[in-house]
Length: 63
Image (cartoon, rainbow, N blue to C red; front, side, top):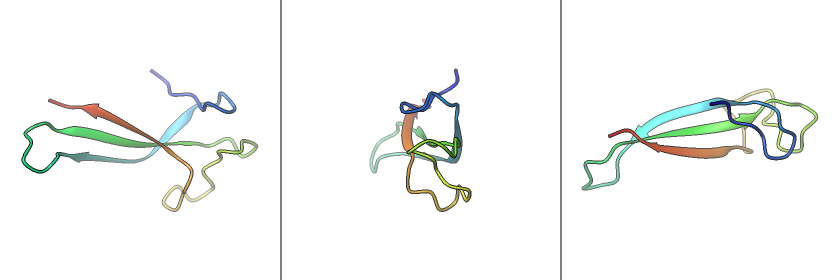
């Protein structure tokens, strides 16, 4: 399912993805850093997605 920007409704894209687990836990999560790529939006991530400061984090349980 496509994630939409809450401000402008544009499609958001993944700028970063990582897997992690809490210390001492066997549960694994995938964490996605989602960004808006609409340059006219106030939440625009910028042109370099490696240096963005505006993003929404999504966590999904893997196991």
